Image (cartoon, rainbow, N blue to C red; front, side):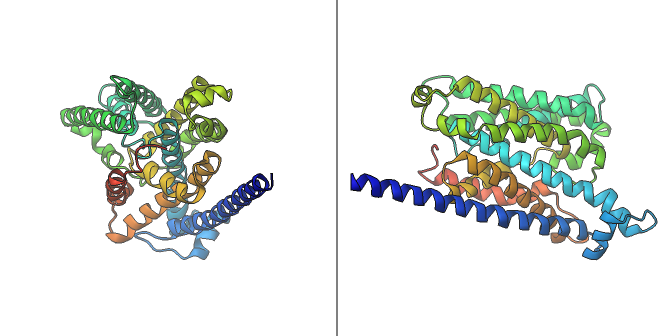
Length: 349
């Protein structure tokens, strides 16, 4: 009896330590978000003092060039980094949890490629260029490719293993990317404005893009946070999850809805940026363990941190020119993917 009491006490202490660690990480992440957001508004081809940034935000003067640069150009870019970073990060965490695959990511599994392909179709075949039109095509592409990857992964013996899911996603991404390139070559003039977008960039967007995607991303994040407890149950295995009363169908539908809203809206706004959804949830899991109720909110904080850092680094590394955020995350993410693939533990969650 005493041994059981000691064990229960140790478990309670471990839970409290994990909660304290998560709270400290959340506070640190929020501090980094504020600092990087101010840096994003201040840094660029035209350097602006932080005091001028504050004046532009709270006492805007349309006659000052610095205020115009901050409010009309850098503010939408910063807000998009926050929204799209959270979207790609949380959608990656959801996919990793639902498939029990630490290599999962909206980019690697082809979700971003599907969204990007349908945006290309909307521009090349129908002539749509506004975010209000391409957004719906992006959402449709995200959900169709997610279903296709899962269906291909389930085919054959063994079910949807992590390696099979990754191979299916990479294959579909290659096919859709090739078709997209063909469509682009057939009508290059129509795609001039999409060059930055196709690489993955938050530059050159206005507040209309931010306001168009914000409701979809907000809804996706709410659904994701609501799914944390059920994803923890699913991680125990399907049989045990059913025994505990969890609805696997409901969990999968909610996960699919959240991933579609998040990855689809973010891809429509800033293009198919990869690896954010791979790196951040995996790094967060080092500190929190497998509890999705902690992984999801912390990913929601640290994924925008990575996105902002990548965008700022892209502005500085080729100053006064720029390197797109999607290129920077690819430089960071490719070695991480190779390292994860070589680890024996990276076979499931």
